[in-house]
Image (cartoon, rainbow, N blue to C red):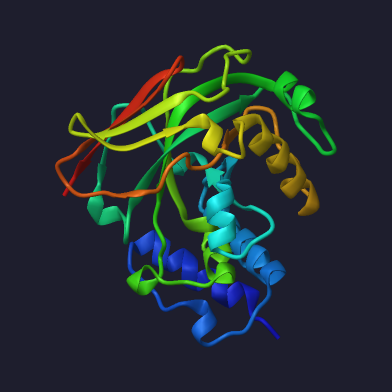
Length: 255
C-alpha cells in the first residue's frame, strides 16, 4: 500500500528546506492517481502552516512536450500565496534546488469556474489576463523523475510572478513572447504554443480540477503553461518576459 502521507512529507521537506531528495519511484511503485494524492497531501502540509490556496498551474501544455513524454493529457499543480513573487522583486537562489523559469500567460478569475464549460464560458469568468512567469524547481536529485514523480512534486511548481492585469477581453491569439536575461533574449515564443490558444488551457484547468473533485475559485490565478522551454536560473540575472499587447513582468535573482 502506498504511504501517501509519508511520501508527501518527504517532498514537502525537500521543498521547504531546498534540499534534493531521491526519486520516489526508486523505492515505491505508485500510480498517477496516487501521485495526485501525494501532491494534495503535500500542499495540505503547507496550508496547515498558514499558506492559502490561490490558484493552479498547468503543465505539459505543449503538444510537442506531450508527445515527448508519451502523454495524452496535461498535468497540473496547486499554487499558494507564499509561492507568489511580486513583479520586480528579488528571489534568492538558495531557496531552490534546480530553479528554471518559463514564460507564461496568467488568468485571474472573478467567479468560480466549473466543468463542463466552453471557451466562451471560461473567458466570461476571467477578470484579467497578464504576462507571467513560472519558476519550476524539481526537488529530485539530478533533475530526473518519472511522470508520477513530477506530478507528486506539485508538477515541479515552486514560484510564479504575474505582471499588471489587462482587460479580460484582451487578444491572446498568437502573441509574441520574449524572455530576457539581463536584456538578452534567451527564449522567444508565442501564446499559440499553449495548446494553440491559452483559453484552451483554462478550459483544461477547469476539467482537471473537476476530475479531482475541486473547482477553480473566484480570486484564483491560473497559470496557462510554458510557451517555450524552461531556462536555468543563476544569481545576478534580471529576468523579464514581455508579451505582445500585455506588457512585461520581471524579477531578479541573487545568491
